[in-house]
Length: 338
Image 1 (cartoon, one colour):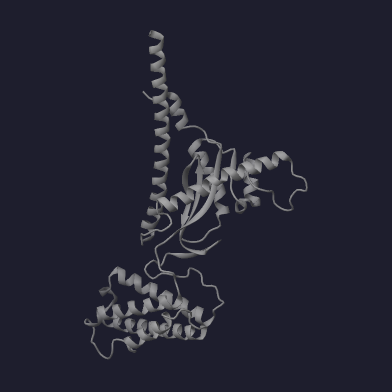
Image 2: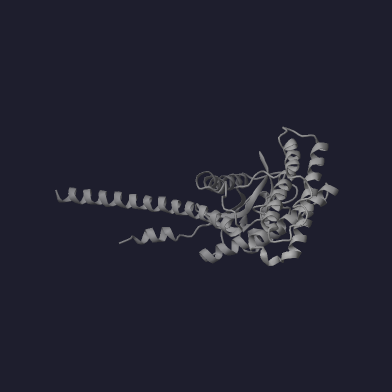
């Protein structure tokens, strides 16, 4: 029989919830404009080859020499640090090759019909057209902002996420908003586009109430979460939001407030540790799946495995304590009989 105290410990009420966000990088090559355009050129050449026998086969497959286009690309790509003028010229050449191939492929499709393309080729063609449009806009106006910029032809859903971390200013993958309660990690929001983690606080607190039946006593988070909306939300529900107040700092801070801030910072390290463990031990630092849904499932499974391991250690600790208690009680009863 399982002791009632063990069950109460398993379903105990946790007072604090810790919030933070991280990025699960995808397994893609570091993106450069020249490399992406070269990949688009090679893909369009293969797509033209696949339908060439079904057409009238009039003229040349491509309006340029493929070997020459390949050599022009390698001449710049193999350099340790190409000059800006030379790099820009090579980008223009590869972009023109891609645009010519798209035009040629469109003419061939008018002869045989779009029904001869499968879903994979059709999706790849749409992605290449979007890459060519974005690269043309960037080439003509380098300072213009390009929303939903494609950085990988095989994984067009991956977006660059600016994090500002040391050594990783920009990460390529999916962003996760996480909450930690007593060492267990929950995914509050998951997506491939960048989002401000501060907007997830209210939803995370409401989910905490659904799981445990009450609001948390305190929410431990960094300064990103401390905006006026979140402060008012927590104030109405009598929830303490960690961190300094908005505006000018206090001239005199009491010893109690300093101690509370120090304790909050120490407890908030839990979420940083859980993120590090998930990335180093369970593979969240490199998502190998290519599809959108499979990548999200892989990231969720990594966190699930970590939670299962944490629960297993907790159960083993309870079992060890129960066995020790039973062993000591048995020895004590034998001593009384003797």
